[in-house]
Image (cartoon, rainbow, N blue to C red; front, side):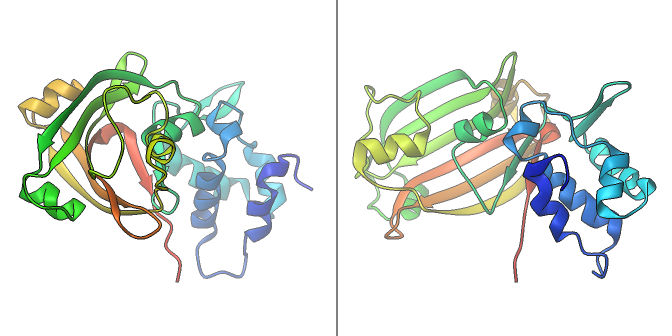
Length: 251
């Protein structure tokens, strides 16, 4: 039994007979490991030699995979100490999505709100289409700049379906989808997303403290309840230099 018991299931899935190269399998294994709460909170990753023995492969294969993660700034090595996840990187998955605050909590990060604006507006054509409502329907628009200490990470703009009971008195310190469930009884179940790469304009430069023309990751999504009815239309702008999506596709 491998001493890091919580990663044993990943070790057991390693397949020497797979057509997938061993170093790619190791890279995928390491990506799974760094998403575990203990490692996100600073636990040292398994030593390369120990991992090589457990997998029955050479240490050079482990090093090849870990080098790729280091090049992506996902992990950092400290001589005489070991290897840890780079806490400056934000890693989220598309097959298991949650609110930004929960993502930060799962990665051991303290969330900071740099800007918070909630106001009622009349829905335009796009918002009305995304939420399945008539144009000029009153809806709440929530804009937030969020991040960690001393650095903004993301600029969110959310529009909520009128059936959601949110107002200025709502407790927005709670994760958003927990708040929606508590206030309105609707459970966020499905997220339909589109992701694109754009460059920062004047507004995004100011919100995220980046230079005009810097790369930005734009994430647009409609969140649905169990009945596949829209709850929220959200646009998020992320700093592209420290945000990575991990996608798992199954056949």
